[in-house]
Amino acid sequence: MFRYPNGKPYEPKEQFVHKKQQTITYSNRGMTLEEDLNETNKYYLESKLAVIHKKPTPVQIVNVDYPRRSAAVIKEAYFKQSSTTDYNGIYRGKYVDFEAKETKNKTSFPLQNFHAHQIDHMRNIVEQGGICFVILSAFNEFYYLEAQNLLTFWNRQETGGRKSITHDELNEHGHKIPLGYQARIDYLKIIDKLYF
Amino acid sequence: MFRYPNGKPYEPKEQFVHKKQQTITYSNRGMTLEEDLNETNKYYLESKLAVIHKKPTPVQIVNVDYPRRSAAVIKEAYFKQSSTTDYNGIYRGKYVDFEAKETKNKTSFPLQNFHAHQIDHMRNIVEQGGICFVILSAFNEFYYLEAQNLLTFWNRQETGGRKSITHDELNEHGHKIPLGYQARIDYLKIIDKLYF
Image 1: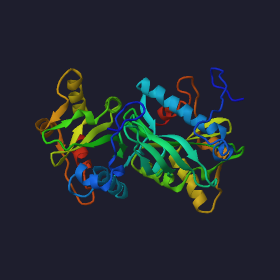
Image 2: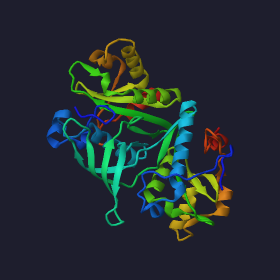
Image 3: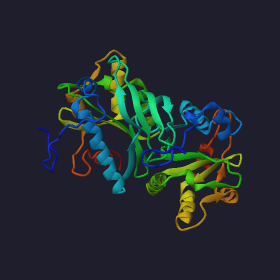
Image 4: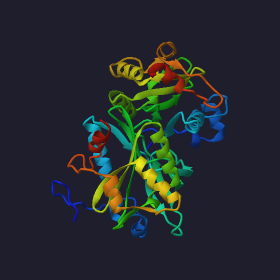
């Protein structure tokens, strides 16, 4: 059982997931990672520490119905692949940009969790001087891995190397994120250490 | 007037507006404000000048159908009010955040184009030291108005003053944005002038 510092057990929750597809589409902790990050960002926002939001899920809207004197109802739409990362915002004047992913693998973090557009985006952000990273939920830890390191692993794959980051590599190059009660996944702590 | 289930009025985005209405809601240039900004941002991205994206339209997904376990079809969803601005990103290492709005009014720019959540967001960004502004399409011009000035006009309204920004006020406090071929609404020029 995975527990927060306050002893509260880490319990997976689900939402928006079609029951039948649930075990295939998402792992149980996927939505929890998002919820934890949303709570963390909410705390950062309310305490004026940082302004970081998750972007809305990109949806291609095909058909909208406007029933009389009522709300617009989207009747047909499709999920689109995002061309950027999910989270961005500002911390201490600096641009912050990250993606959060998880694996239930025991030995390595598969790079297929990322797609090429996201990698391109992260490369662009690094070139512009932004604070760019990924939060990886793996091996019962939350890791902060700088985009520069992810890009190195991605390039290794592109040139015929392994398609994942090993547990050892993540321990060496990543930073374990401290967990808190209000800032559940307190990633600003790592940013402080790396940039300020 | 269409309304969301929570009573908030629905403001159609250009992309969902029927062709016939497009020429009415925007200038005669055949492009919507959103399209012009997307083209501008695409040019900035491709020339490595800045990485600025429009956020996806926020949608509350209610019902998703999985016909063949391959493609998910969203069968029922609703437009949600955004809690942030539509555009953000990074330019020369700095966090950039803005909203774009237009009016067909001849004499003033109505503040009802903004909602309180967006104003709160802009206030937060200003406090964090970000570059925050609005692009206003009005009086056959594109104006760059710093969020600090918008907040002043908003506060005037909150304390019983006028509910719009006059043409004269916009000429005095706003910056006319130069138009280009590739960077159609070349707002980075104004950022250069103000911050670098």
